[in-house]
Image 1: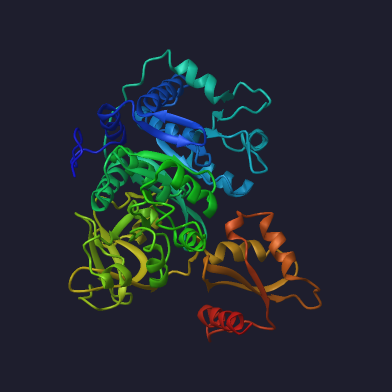
Image 2 (image 1 turned 135 degrees about the horizontal axis):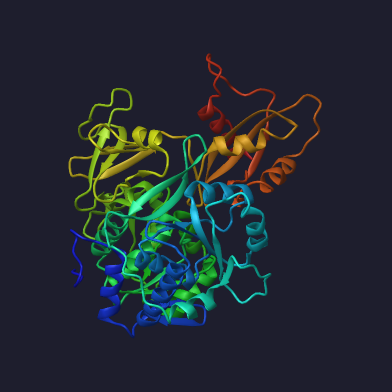
Length: 529
């Protein structure tokens, strides 16, 4: 497969989009509900938005925060950022106030593109409070038709685009190694880290991924994964590179997904294991109901062979492995792989991507079939964590390999098997949750004496979050009390699914909680119940 007008030696998102728009300006690019936008229409809107932002004083290198669900405006803002030479900062609309404030402050965002309100969160009201605490934020762009209070720092999206249509598109430098996006992921101690990904990181990785899948401009891709994640962002960029039609699903629901696939004749369906677990339980998710559905990728957390086999009764599917720091794809299976390779491994590295297995104790390289930490090097790997030089140094080996924190083995044919996680991260429904972050919140509850948060296996979610608590003496509490307490301060996906009470937590001789033992106790309890 080839893409005219592009070069792997110089990849920039603006160039990739211009090439796709030139090949088929009148073809559908974005489908969202009743809205259908061609490549030419999105091109015009993105250029107008870029011109309007430049007129406000937004310059190359400035950070543009986007707090939106899977709406066309998210894609337009991404492209406008590329035309402007800026850096997009995708933010989860489900974050709580303090989580949102941290990311905006740390990213030093100059402007925010958001809905006035979304799912009970009044972002305009939050902005009114935040503006005094975030000196870097100059403006807010409000997307939607709702009435909102007026402030000379707040601009309606449509008015801004209309104004920009009369202005000249900024001629910003197109450096493929400039930072395209900063995406936040939790750190090992729960502190969010901003992953800096260049145009080359994201565009080239997307290119290699769609090549491996055999994607063509005739394909229709359903984007049900949130765009603010690296998985969602890569799906959008991959769609641009290949020139496909993107069908945006605002909120995943298995019945709605099946409806969209059937109605829009979707051929590509990617998602995290939780999504596919729910889809295979949907009676209408069949090859007969969805004859156009050809293939897709399952990634984001460990995938069981049973799920793969059940999905393949409806369509072919490939398994991929990656992280936000790797743009995201490191490895993936291919259609020509053996059944065992396609089920038992996460495939082979993409072209130009190198993987090594590192001894977790000595740091020395392992040979085939030995278990160690997976290390990655290639054009997909981030430049570093934004404003965190010490964290960046710790993340790389002296030879420049990124340490994933995942335990793996590499066979003699170059296929990777993920066997566990060195980090304590819990992956719930495709979201990364770090125990320390949840523990810090719940530890503030007056009835908590000791706490340890662990992940326990779950068929649908992948892992559930369990808060193991030693209550303070004399406290009369229910598990729901702690769940409600956490929900007031954190995103819903970080809130514990279970609360278990203990008289004491199992400890090592050095005073550390035996997390693995604790998780096993909870898992056994659930199995027995």
